[in-house]
Length: 420
Ligand SMILES: NC(=O)c1ccc[n+]([C@@H]2O[C@H](COP(=O)([O-])OP(=O)(O)OC[C@H]3O[C@@H](n4cnc5c(N)ncnc54)[C@H](O)[C@@H]3O)[C@@H](O)[C@H]2O)c1
Image (cartoon, rainbow, N blue to C red; front, side):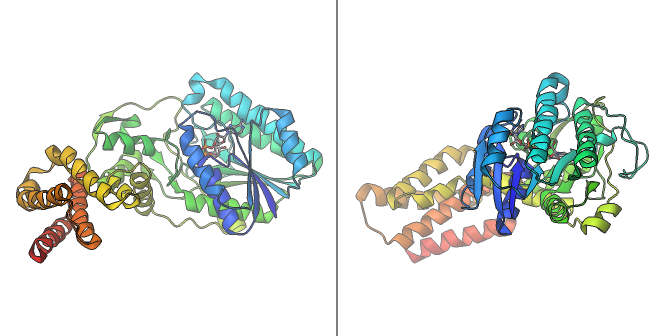
């Protein structure tokens, strides 16, 4: 099957495309790589997708009708998964036209060309934001959603209406998916959990709206993708589904889990609720369970752990030493020493005393090796570098220094010394 995924370099589009490719499908991707957030993250996602011969990307804008026509005429597409949009609630206050263009003009261009090309199945992203300040919780797809509290939400509700008219008039199968705060690896830097992580690591004060009492139904990306793929398989004539986690968590608790996972306590400034933000989002997913067999299973503790692991790896937080593995041996040694010297002033005091002498001995050894050109076996040098790396890593993990790991490293260094 060939599926057109719009916004394939975006957060949800990337994960969906990856899963479809793993499932053996052909994917045509569309993305304009706009700079709403760091486009290099979009490029990085796209690079991963392009490793598959079954993925073909078109760089272009959905608001450009001739571009949409070209993509659809050049490919035999079975189904459309339309995820490209101008996302984000707050940005719609200052940049309304970005929403009108991508979410209304872009949406209309695509669905109309789908109709002309007789592509019957059209699955598209809606949002929990259509529920606005709905008072009845959890939010059900039967609730009235006529009162959006942001332009972003208004465009998403409009998408659902346009889709209905195309279903009614042209018998297209249209399914709208209301996502509830998706998060996870390769996530969106504009979203709170992402920017909080960045700021906590940089020791910056984080601004927490609604005094941390805002409640969200945070949904892990893999669960969302399962829901999207199920919708793609079904071809229902006209449906709307909530894709949430069905568990609400306060923003305060979510931040607490991030702090725990990072091992750093955040500097916080509490702010009141903003008018464009809903106080709560909470998905009733009974209907999605029934019709899509949708059973989200990732707790925020698990999901955040995966996100933080990815974040540290992607932004090389505490993993700088990895680069050594690509360098020739002598260069590695020198680099390890330079890194250590740069980091030395930031050592945690208690640990520094304990490891200082051993480490300096090791450093002197290595320096002498370099100066005298003495040849040691690779494994000896690698062992020394590993010890240096452990020390450097401990510096990065300053706030979650694990006693065990430190002791192990201490033992390793001693063993190396004894072996000499
Ligand atoms: N992430 C969430 O929590 C969430 C929640 C509710 C709804 N949604 C919706 O899900 C969809 C995917 O969201 P996301 O989080 O992956 O956002 P994202 O911004 O990471 O992905 C959207 C992608 O679409 C591309 N794009 C935007 N406008 C385009 C245009 N005119 N032409 C071509 N490409 C364009 C962007 O470059 C981006 O890569 C969006 O429709 C969004 O509104 C997301």
